[in-house]
Length: 92
Image (cartoon, rainbow, N blue to C red; front, side, top):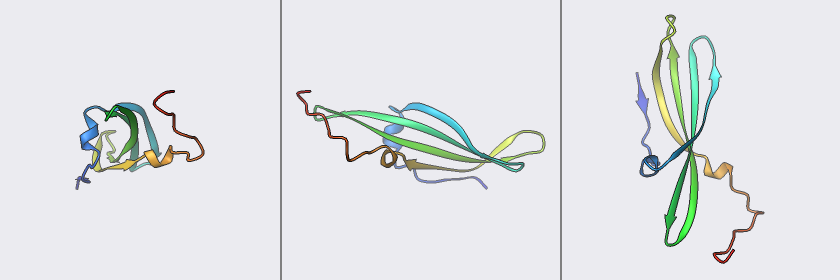
C-alpha cells in the first residue's frame, strides 16, 4: 500500500531548487531514496532560505522494477543552523 504524508513544505515546493539525490538505504527488498531541496524566499525585503528533504521508500521487484510504498517530507533547516554564526545586517 502506498502512503504519503501531508506535505507542510508544499508552499515552497514550486519554488524549490533540487540540491541532491541520494539512495540512503538499499537491500534486496527495499530502496530508500532522499531528495534534498532549497526553498529561497524574499519576504519584507529580506532573503531567507529553508531546506527540506523528501524520503521515498520503494519495494524492489524481482524484475528490477520498484514500487513506491511510502513518501514523507522532513525539515532539513535544523540540520544547517549554527547559532555561533552571526546574521549579516542589511547594510553588509
